Length: 397
Image (cartoon, rainbow, N blue to C red):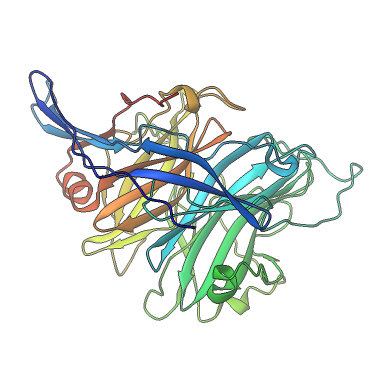
């Protein structure tokens, strides 16, 4: 079945005192996979992104405001029982021009499973199966030891907050394994790229990589080997901790990575004085590894923000540059009205045609996206300029 898109349009608008251009966009047709049939669910919806330039009045430095998708969120809870309550905290990777998104979903049974969607342009969802692609099975007992843990619902346990990387035609996924108040650990699984593309969900049996009796989250696998070894970053503050492996089969469910999960307050910082965790897998640039992270002001611990850090390319335990201000804050309705207000939480980012697409969860309920020119972000980060996402665009009815 052939469907014609409408012609590209360039919309220009003048505002004082700065000129603002609405970028060229394509009207898109979203499709939703329903069993063996495909039906149209939206025609002619324009995707607009707005790039504004402004000046810092206090320091007279230029600041870059990132582009924000006008029709966020891009994924919302559906009528299917496994994702009827929440769809959030996405990870993503690109292959052959398609960006694949894997997101956490919560349904009627209050368990966390993983759903899937894909996009060809980075913004519009062009396919989304009606079923989940990964579910973790475990033995839960209410008689076991209890832990103090809150994470966006899903009290029945399951798999949370995936981080995916593609290395040598193998997709590796680290996720948080929650056993329903009894354990919060990190687990690792993988799948062949060919199986993933053909929707044959032959995931390798997951193994725990963090020890029992501890609460660990937000571990990331680097998307390529460093000095010939796989690298897993499992702590950032008070110092960056990375473990290296010749082969990930060394993590066999019996050997565990010993981390530091204390996350103390850093009183020398302001908005990010309480570091919460690394977001997406690190992104390699010519100047070093770009890492996006989540943090809070310890005086306002209910409000998540995101920042950026540039690490040394050969020794990523060395911090080269760090954003002085948050690059993403929860200011929109879909970032505050959900299961938890004031939350922006990213597990995935993709670089496409020099544009960085950041996929994130809003209010522990929705999947959203924002983007920025990667070189501009790196340059401003290295020059200690302010980088901030604009929040002026509103979702169309």
